[in-house]
Image (cartoon, rainbow over all chains, first blue to last red; front, side):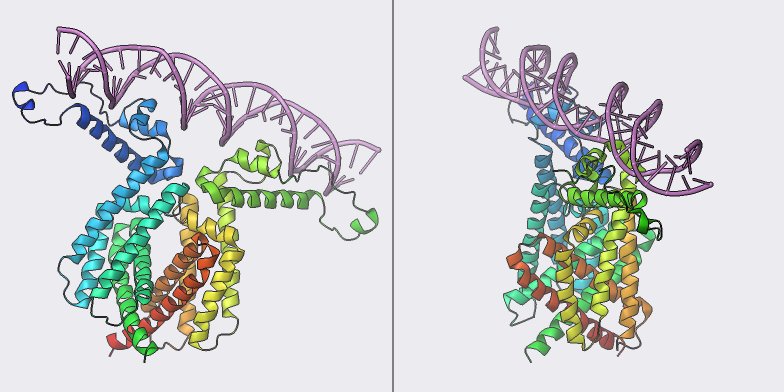
Length: 227
Length: 227
DNA sequence: AGTTTCAGTGTACGCACGTTCACTGAAAGG
DNA sequence: CCTTTCAGTGAACGTGCGTACACTGAAACT
């Protein structure tokens, strides 16, 4: 059941309006539609095989175009991969924005972080799965892109942490802490992706506890180290 | 430069000794040699492409046998993958044995754990890389095998932790803690694998700090929770 | 000495792959 | 209205793949 998209002439645009405002209809946005269809198809097909096992012909068939038409949109599968990395981290950043909404007590931050993470992983399953897979995946270009994004992420979390009442932390220690937290969150995401729905409460409870342990640990570790 | 192994008749065994003790020479151990060569070749080739991108013909060429001969040793690439999982976790368990050698103060446990991990990851680079890749890899069979091994691992660590002076911890809390620790160690391993040698001291220092944070956190979290 | 076993051979098959190239025909634009 | 642009077409290519099948010849067994 291909996702057919290439209806050559989908609709005649009424001239009266179309000429006034350049409604960006038809040609350019038909291209955009196809591009989206390719990204969606790739995201779906990658679920089984990873980007490495994705073939241009599979994608084309799924989208409903001829193989060669793929090149009108991407130079290579790697470029497709990079576009998916960008898109996937887009939804991850959207998630962070949700977490930042209101930052009350520390306990509440932990609670909302974990529940927002859990919700987003399920909502954007395909994106999170893609990231998890390609983080250690076959294509060096894509793999490195994913890792760079995570490092960026880690840095952002570090500056966020600096705003919390954990005074006198060196930037290095903040990086170490945020590296630990990001790592745990990645692990949790992967567990959520792999788990059956009924195990979800256990996982979120565990993630909450772990995040709390880490924070409590960081605070006490610091005070015990700089006595 | 194939790893040629198929010298049909490598050596005539001197009858005098060979007949006394069944030295298990030639046929059965020639098979074993080839099997090993296949495993080694697969481990090397997988480094670039992942198990998903590994072809039976590549392996055969690398080993120096004809493609069809592969089937004398494995039913499928998946079976090869499972053998590699087993082997890779073998070296991981060897590592743990090293860590357990002498368990003095808590600070020393942390130090030796991290340095042993760091050393082993570099010594058994191929094995650790394989595990990291296939943990989210393309083949469900192999992927699940890796995850099952990690769960086993986590359980073992939990029982180890139970022997430490952290009394009155519920088994659930121990599982949560060991899940956190195993997760951090996986993340650290992946960072070591991806890092250049000169960044290694930073990474081990970070890992040490994180492990300490986690332990301090776990202890304080527990005492604050069960006040 | 005669028979069986079996790791490795060699050919041949059909299939999916990426990429090339010249093409078509509707949309965009002067 | 007439020209240009360009997303999608369709045939053709060379390559590497997994697997089938009948085989060989030395090692192992009786």
